[in-house]
Length: 221
Image 1 (spheres, rainbow, N blue to C red):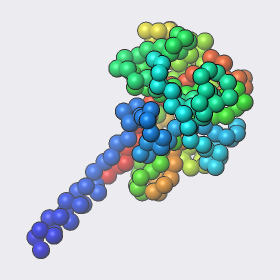
Image 2 (image 1 turned 90 degrees about the horizontal axis):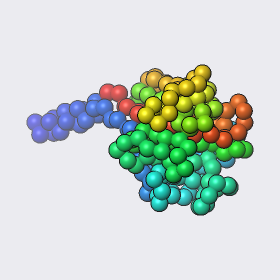
Image 3 (image 1 turned 180 degrees about the vertical axis):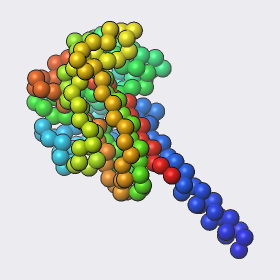
Image 4 (image 1 turned 90 degrees about the vertical axis):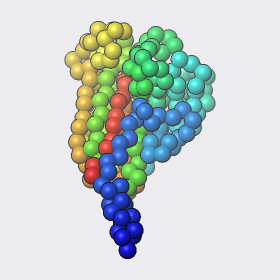
């Protein structure tokens, strides 16, 4: 009986422990879905959950890794929207030196037809989760995007990015709203989704729109 009681107590301790999911630390260029994380895009210019599609092609040959909707060697259908990742332990620029992201940070860009770049978290079990996210304009041409955090179909946060808010070693911080942050605790059922989205902004073009994302989600005890 004592052994059973000890096991039950240990199970209770495990159930009460926090679990932390960090997008940058967990990121994979091999698997999609990758445990609770999914990298993708919207089929149309809509953030409705049924519009989410998984990226199918990973590009790993360049200085940045990319997830794309389909295999494509250059800009065009299948290239956008993308989810990129800096695999290095320091900030660096992309191959054309147009934008920069910090170490192990995500970069996202919508398509020119309004499809969103999306990263989605699927709750592995029910509980209250603390969500912390930060979006930064990453393009030296000054990003102009709309950014969002959603719980299933419900908006938790939305903002506009206008400017450069990344590593100042590469470009001066500039613009009317170069960065935007969200923090909140949200009850999630198992299988609920938290979606981080980057769109093409009010000007309805994705040119010079690369926007970085750092995100961490913690299951509270």
